[in-house]
Length: 132
Image (cartoon, rainbow, N blue to C red; front, side, top):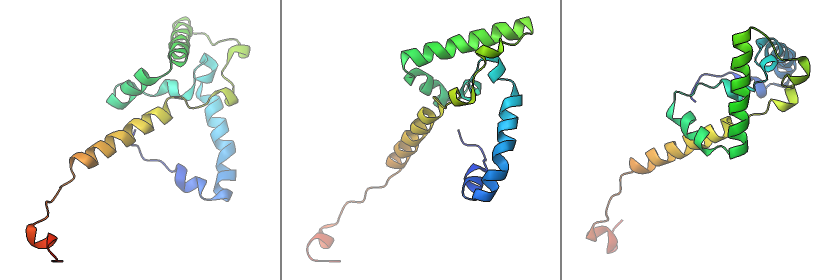
């Protein structure tokens, strides 16, 4: 999931973080996905190979919960309705469950590519007999 982000820049500046936090809360509250019972990671497109592999690595309970949330949101969308407010996803429940797995997969892929592109040079007999 390589996409440009200003998050590290903002997180390193406490004054900017204090200014952006209310704006971020407002944005998340008004984006509407929580009113359908979804989490932020439910919105990650499934087309990339990393995301598909991450979905396969999800624990069974989390995978079931994801499918349930997606189907329920789809039904609400078809009916042009929102869930009752008691069933909305609360901010403290909207934790990332897929993003850490995706980052782990991408780190594994990067490490594998680095290892595969490594060039191994054999020592010559002159360098092993006291040469530099």
